[in-house]
Length: 458
Length: 71
Image 1 (spheres, rainbow over the protein chains, first blue to last red):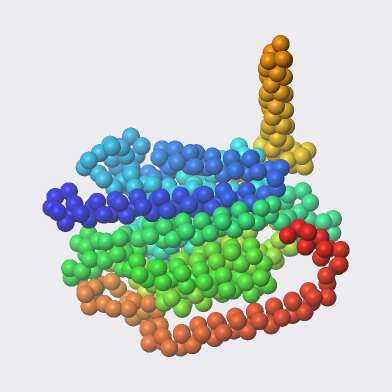
Image 2: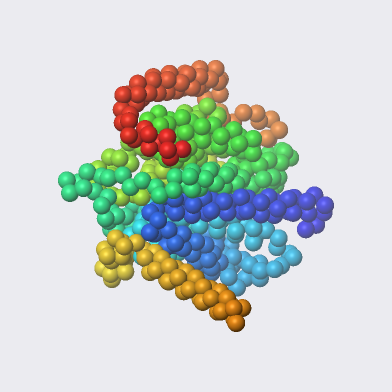
């Protein structure tokens, strides 16, 4: 850090990302509460543990190889080789991936991306509750969190990614790169996993499985909203000079940028986050006829739909796009459930996957011709590029890997819990151990009390 | 063609103002937004009225008593 301004910018940027990471932790807290609230009492501890263990497993694998993938894969394998030069500083044995006073940003930047990885894995976790083996889910968590989503980020969420350069792909707040891919992945897994026992009647009619604790679920989704706000800030570069961007921007005016280093403002994304949340809530309330949980999820789906272009939209555009997305997502969820007999336990495929896809498609039309990047020679944003991008995110990098791995796990007999365990509940053994331990300690205390009373009487 | 008037970021940002799409249509967008908002109230009023009308005829005396006890 040479010069006071450079030092101040570096420390500010470091602190900015650090704060976003802390906010984003609330997303995971929210997902845990949502899953536990949605599951039945006999499965609570396993449901919670399944999601909690995503944190360490994705963290260590993201340290070992996920972060390197982001820097090495922007053009690999179709448009060039691995970028080993950029990747070198992000290998787990690089001295920049440790305590180093000449590098103050790698750790917090790594953490910001890592929190996105947890989110991707956690989205999948919600759709498969009450019947997947934890061991199977944790392998999926590593694959979606430290491999597939970060490949899509290198391709379509990196200033040099081939999708940005060639397709004009634009996805500022991750409609596709987090939500469409995770929703697609979840769809692939639940297609193989099958529905929970009792989800469908003999004639194929779907049954509602109401949440065990609606209030926990409500607080959970509000925490997800809060964390999502931090996520929005984390997707920006807070302040950078035109020379720092090294693109075509002229003059000396510093700016905030999106992940592609194209200009936006914190003001814009604050307007658009709140207006798309509102559009989503209002549309979901109407379309679901006031169903509380679809209304809350609709707020989230609204933000996700508008996220691809929320760096550029007018707030009213963000609101309307969110509302349109939510109506499509709601209809699609029930159509898929009835038609294919799929049990998406928390609506994750719909709220994240379908909303992400719809958001990408809409942004291709609304932002048609707008530059995707400040660098020369990049394609501008266009509907074909966004639709192609949506297919890559949802189907190629999401659905296919999830489905293939689940197929392998099913063939090996390690995907789904036995029916007997599903009926008695995943926590059955723990509940009995708890009751036995409780009875034993009460009995011991009673004996102690009796012994003391006996001694006093003598 | 570009919906926000920029086809390249080869610009001096000191000279740039709005960058949202469809500049010049702000009033129309506000009208659409207000119609969405007022329309929402209209739909909600009608639906809630229908729901309450239906609900007032569905109460079972025993169940209502149980609800009162439940507090």
